Length: 390
Ligand SMILES: *Cc1c(COP(=O)(O)O)cnc(C)c1O
Picture 1 (cartoon, rainbow, N blue to C red):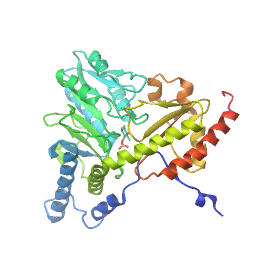
Picture 2: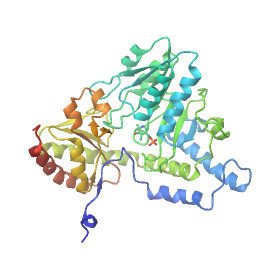
Picture 3: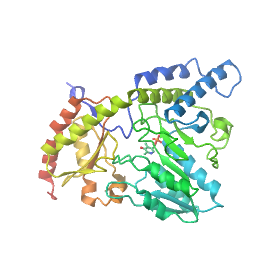
Picture 4: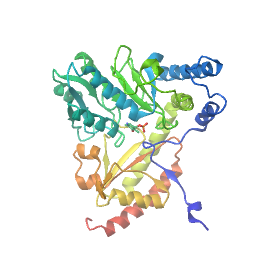
């Protein structure tokens, strides 16, 4: 008998990607079949796509209290971040060459800034506090007369810490600077009201909110100009060339609609599961430490360090039991580097190496949590017994 067939599967890696909601798949299928029109065509096929495109834009705009014309569809969070940061830097390079970001950003921001550095921009990567948070004062202190852009993420993908983006935005606005935030992890989980957060650009992605992969968007506040990333047709108000991904866009709009409907329920339920998991693991396993802010943290995130155990070994052992989690470690040329986020928070290298991230989702159950609580303490005990560090 195949033992895989009997294995229980528990998915706790929702910050990497989420399962697509069946209702999302349902709204996408017509755009892969009969409704295949190009939204730029003037005939009935095209007009049908155009209506769906603008309906989706409207729905997403409403979700963050923006105007429809402030929403631009992209291929996902990575492109949105590139479009915002490169677009602003390239357009404003005559005004100044200084960009402020942070050491805890997603690579889609970090490496975009590194690239701009090679082009002669000067980038200040702010160091977060021990909870992974960027304080507004740190942003204020880093501003020079050459600063043109600030890019600070809304919520961190590894430790879930939520940054005070409204305060940061008030500072940047007061100084006449552009402010971009990578909201890929917070979008759909936290309230985002563009009228309350003085942000000029905000990135989001479909596959982190139970939507499809390869679709996302960028909110660009009206009046904000950017240099183009992609050149071609006049799509997306002549700011992002390329025939619109209609199945993806319809799916993204549906995923947003479901997130809006389920917001309170998801928050209560997933937070309850997450808190139960932490509580029970603390009872069962000595010497475990929480990474990230104790309160100002996404409700589905639990990033823990297990003293004396390699995070990668933990992940492999969990995977053998059907449990999917992740670590922020990067594998470079055979060696495992600790997460750049934990390192930036001053987490000791051994503890950073021993961390794993559980990110829960709306389809998890208390049985999933009980299963992890049954399996994980045994794995930790076994690995600690084998470890020369213990
Ligand atoms: C996943 C993620 C991205 C990248 O989004 P894609 O749609 O996968 O390109 C960017 N930023 C954060 C914080 C993310 O979690």
